Image (cartoon, rainbow, N blue to C red; front, side, top):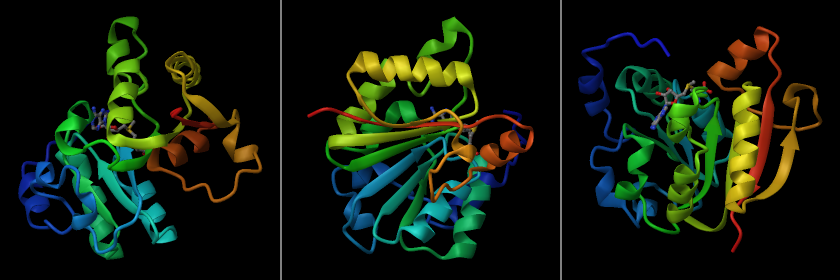
Length: 213
Ligand code: SAM
């Protein structure tokens, strides 16, 4: 992804601690205290400009959401959306997903969303794919029993790789669509990348998997 340098981004993120959690490690094991209501927590890893997480939070007030994004220059756009939407059930974290265990404890999270994750097509970059086995282990270590991963992409190679990775890990496949926009799935919330790629005529793949007890 091409990133525009925004030297003011950190300052902007710092101005909104109610949305961008300043000391996320202090909530490890007690994320319910960061929100108005004690309810299940769903996280999106690689939240980008934040449309998905914002619209999900609007549509599902009975769930708490956290959008995780590595780049501040991208996260500021997600922050703008939250400021406008004024939602009590969504927060943003400017962290690397590889460090999830620093910020979340076992049973903190009940669902992980992965939307249009970077495909890292070269074999030597396999470990960077967010569906690589080490990431699955990381997600499992912060999730409730039978926690779920919901995954969408337009990249057939990454989708196939991920299905194999999920299966090798022992995850249970509970939903699959090889053409989401021409399926009977209802309530789909489009991400920024999903809109762009589907306008280009790309097919969208989607699956849901869950960890076994
Ligand atoms: N989910 C958004 C969408 O569908 O529009 C953005 C997709 S974009 C291709 C992938 C996003 O994941 C980028 O914003 C990138 O910075 C973020 N990302 C990639 N690896 C990450 C990591 N290890 N930790 C946190 N964010 C990451």
